Image 1 (cartoon, rainbow, N blue to C red):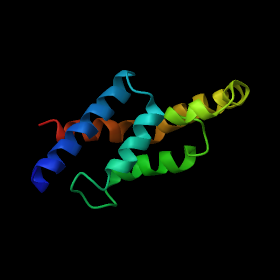
Image 2: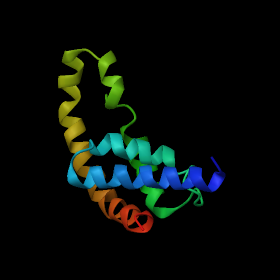
Image 3: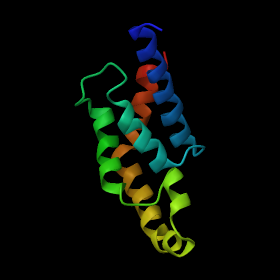
Image 4: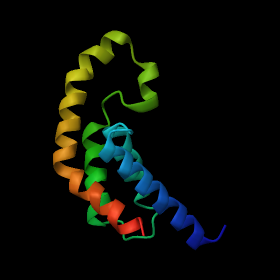
Length: 109
């Protein structure tokens, strides 16, 4: 696989994530965390506005039981953090929904 093909594959994944976050088929915070990680893989400057939004979301929610990490948390702890997770989803959408749409528009050509 060439470097260009790799970048294209990562951009396709970014579109898949952002689209799923927009339609609700991908947990918003899980998608944001993965988009944050992809910012170094899509052939853009690391300070790209769209991807930086997700880096911020990832940073602000990294203490929460999200994704596969949930399996290591007790049910009691999960229940305790659920209100914060829901509030974080609401906040994350406020600060990154337009960036989600932008990623889809930019790379879905």
